[in-house]
Length: 178
Image 1: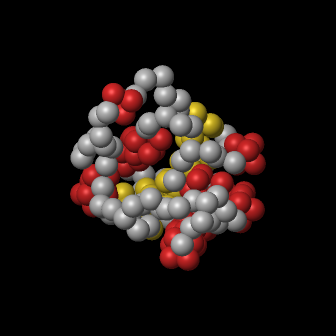
Image 2: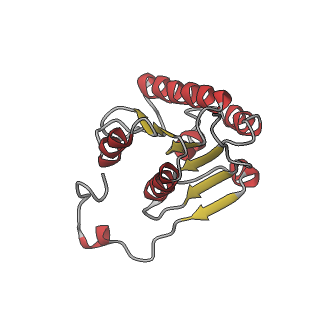
Image 3: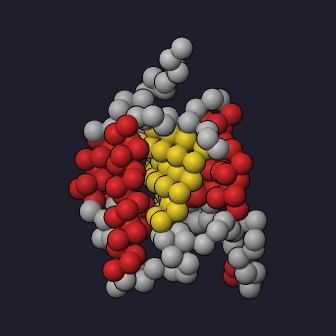
């Protein structure tokens, strides 16, 4: 029996300086898995083990998560050759997954910054999105989403901070921020 597909896959962008972009995408992934959909999350510029990676492993094979990055932050103004190579690997995987059309929801986590700082080519991403199978939903997360991506998207949500506990000196916490 053939699996039922989404009748229309859309493009969603979660951006802005506020907390919650990846968390929002993961909430959508959880909902999709709960409805029998197949989800794949490709993480750009993330290299340390996170709670979401551990949780995804527990939901496999319905939810797959693969990270491309080194521990620590990428120097976005002058990325190391290894960071560029990892971003390219992440994009190549994303392109293959989207073209194959075997997943209902593809999440490209932190791709927006990779685009803004030219770790990967914007036009290549826009073409990938335009040429995706009609049933594939794609979510792109990260700060500073390029205007061309916002124009192509069907939904854009901007997270903006009104108040954040970092300002009071609270550090990133296991299970909450990672």
